[in-house]
Figure 1: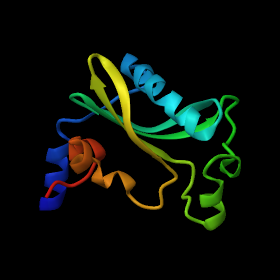
Figure 2 (figure 1 turned 90 degrees about the vertical axis):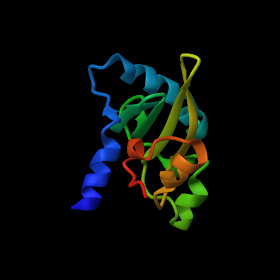
Figure 3 (figure 1 turned 45 degrees about the vertical axis):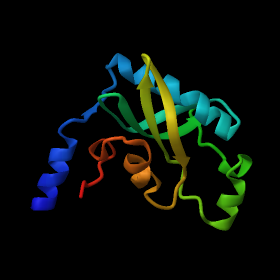
Figure 4 (figure 1 turned 135 degrees about the vertical axis):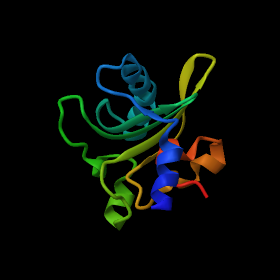
Length: 136
């Protein structure tokens, strides 16, 4: 019960960005070039989570082809990870920061096998609640 209350308190400052919110397109457009470079192809996103707190934003998205098909990660720079079984699906997690009115991608991970973004609050100073992580 106390742990749940701590998580709820940490999330209080973060807000989800809905489909109709104009910030949604701005954030996804800021993220898209980094993911397209990483995957070597044009993508669109299926949004699982898009949340903002102050100057920070967190995205959990699944990239797909512009035609709406699944990405073949065996044809990307992640092919070796796929072959070795250390690629856990198509999910992308990203941290963005707003500086001088522009959203910039600070970090992202593709297909992590663990909670790769757990270190981002310490590494970048992002709010733990934004990432739905418990604060100590």
